Image (cartoon, rainbow, N blue to C red):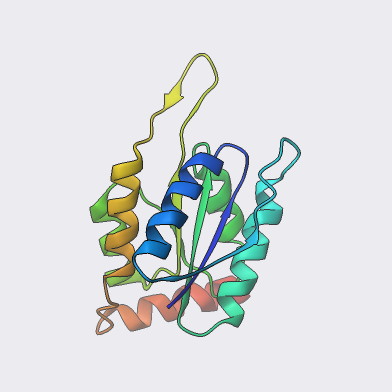
Length: 154
């Protein structure tokens, strides 16, 4: 399976750790957009990853930003992309099992001085492992997943 990874400046550190682990685990990892500078824009990064996922059979994407929210919103704008912002292994599991999610979005951590999104590299690695090692159940979910694409076209 080919894995496309994209991240903004808030996701750089976590992305590098995840990429290192994915490569150690023998995965084919590609970074279609990894500027990681102060002027990076998550919609551009999400687009680059989603386009690669849609064009590459048997591939998935992993997107990281501070909260994960922006990347998830941007990724789900693409017909055929089913992106999930996972906050637990169960989220990653059911997203793959029931929705056949093809993009995993993770929060890398962020604080605006009032509220904070905490992150943990070990937890993120476990969510990625769960996402990659869970198969699509199909069955009753086929109709629902097809409806997602139909609605996207309308």
